[in-house]
Image (cartoon, one colour):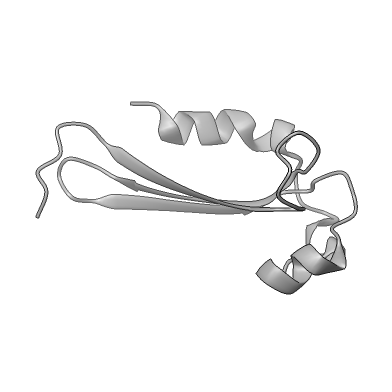
Length: 86
């Protein structure tokens, strides 16, 4: 087992496509492992404020209908930042 001196976070994103300049996040998952080996997990669907192409939905299974009432990234950014602090 690795002895951590600081928390370690793993971040997984699902997006509307593969172009970071134009595509948006539709889901973000974070697993944070603390030095005492406890972990916290956060998973959020995110409204990308644009249609999700069928080809992207075929990869990750997230559809426009699933995110239509989800918060935007701007609305969850502060919460995610707090989780990643440290």
